[in-house]
Length: 554
Image (tube, rainbow, N blue to C red; front, top):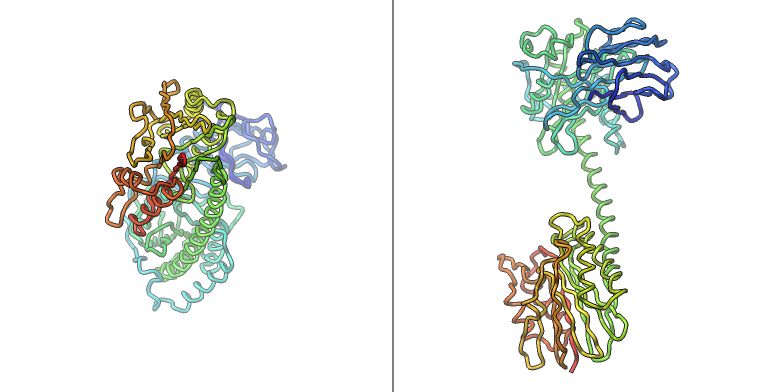
């Protein structure tokens, strides 16, 4: 369906036309409503559809209706069908008609009042290399220095990219009094397309919007070449370029904006329609020097803005880290005859490992331990979700089988694809000295007995991670806890911790460490973490690390 973009609003507004005739004006009942402009009639004009084509029709608007700069007689329909990117004007208000608002990545996109036109192909000559920056200073050295100083003065103190481009054009119009129109086009934030940053007309009452040739812009960007045409409307070098030949430009200059890294990130284009005041090769050299300084200033502000955004993100991540830490227990249960220990280290500011340990009724302790598939912010969000679910569920039941079923069903609901959680849920009855446990795809619970023997608890009953299948039948494992029994849980950040030579810590080393390490649960947990750090030997942590140890004292 066609669209109309209102260009003179504070923020350009695009309206999809779904029915015809589509009236345009101040009337709130119209398809396109022009607000707060008394120079536009209530029903100023309309778009009609005839045999699959669209036509603009004047409805007697007081200040006339225009299509591509040509007035449509009052109460008359244009005999030229509307085409994509046609420029419309209702009184003083400018609009753009769009048939296809999407273009392949890397091509030019229209916005504001700069018309980035399609063309066929062209052979371009009359160039000068822009990769050297400021060009040859021997050419009009005094003018170049004045131009650079003029740009510096106009941009002094600027920290807003949206305000810089118009200021650059204002300075260029002072430096080049023969320029009638100018525009700056830069890469979008994603760098996959070019978008207009600013445009300027010396005669602000002129209806003609600034139009650029895709052929010229892409040539300038790709080759880092400044281009001058003495007469673009008749120059045989541009004969194959449809957009150029339709512009009636007498002289134009286009130079690249080059980043500090030497990459093109946009162009500055100036043109004049005065055949007597054509641009010269010296003008091109001057524009190249001034544009180089403008590019440096633009890049500096962009980098500063990026740094400020990074600082803001870091501050937000610090808050997120504090929020996540608040979800972990500050103090573990203090129960006579038992001891509990846990540690958590995220690879990034926040992470996806999770543990909880809290008291239930009748002397029972809930142990909840998991590892979200993924780390960073996505993992942290799921970690916060499971933390809430476990706390709520265990407030109603201490039956491990019933609890894991409810937790899994909740996590399966609206779960992001691929974001499952390997998880262990256990309830310890400290009065009966008995453990009830469910393992949902996590490492087996390691149980070291008082005699030093080691057992992997419940390997025969390990189910799938939670968040995958809502009705999975998890098996509950139960066993007595003897004096001196010690238990250890960890996430894969322990087993997969890397040394500088990329050697892994390995599951075998974890098992052996638990078997031969300290008999005190807290000492064992701290010693295991220290051993992992020793193995990493300063190498950056590549995954979240969580360790929990608990046991019955002798």
